[in-house]
Image 1: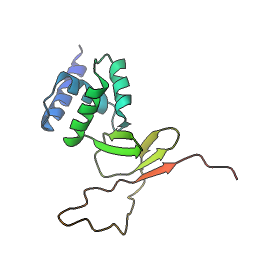
Image 2: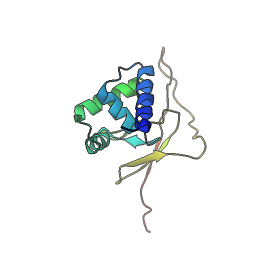
Image 3: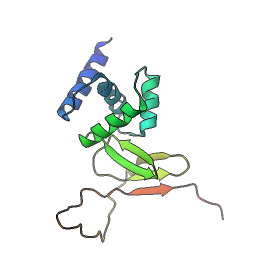
Image 4: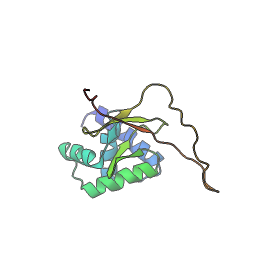
Length: 143
């Protein structure tokens, strides 16, 4: 094992610990896959495929559990896009997304802030935590 891998593994271990999670072997392996490639959007199935390809023996149920634990710990942001299709975003800052229909591809909206007006007042005792905007795209239709 090279020293670069050990340094990355220690950094992921620390990140998981600082989020209040126990750094199990599977959590560390999944976190390493999630965060090693920068900001990205993945479904549980996609992460499971990456884990299997990387030689990480993990069930799909374990991947789902870890992703939800990472989300609750603030390491990920969950995006419900298409019915039962859920993506997990490694960029937890406030931002919005484009979604390409038919390709099941999602990516960040890079240009300036999106303004949302006329939001309803939240019920008593509640506050708005976040507003997620997903702009759905498709190829232009010829007229």
